[in-house]
Length: 199
Image (cartoon, rainbow, N blue to C red):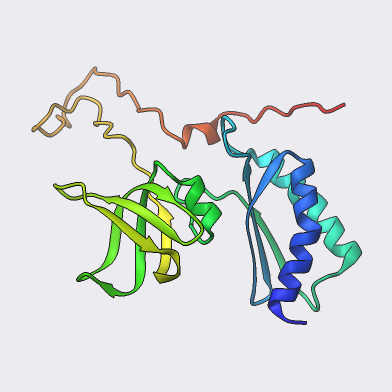
């Protein structure tokens, strides 16, 4: 059985489970005895995926894989979320990332560049249009089959360090001033996850 056939069989088994949980099968890779399943919230949903949801997907998918046994030999199952800087491999990944900053490495040097970074402004089944981070805001259309690797780029939005003034470094010796930590995505991990009861 080829990797493609195995991957198709796994996808046919896994996709309905994830869909029933009102989640999105973002990506699925089977390589070197490792099955990586990436799940996300549905496009347009508020908030991200929780650890409880990932644990539930792992349990349900693992049970069905054990029962149907579509993978010959031993394998490792990894279930995760795409993260803040998500890999873009399929046309759907690019379409979902429209409006976000992306970093693209091309298979070969084109127009003197191998790396392209900017805001993804359009994507279809064959191309991605990126507004470059240059002074002229040049728009570049990149064929998807010319891309070696691509990912979204997470930016903190220019949050300055507490106590810092523009053009000056923060005074490390200041006493009595309470440090205020800017709120970021990592703060979500510090909060307890609320479990939603299902009937």
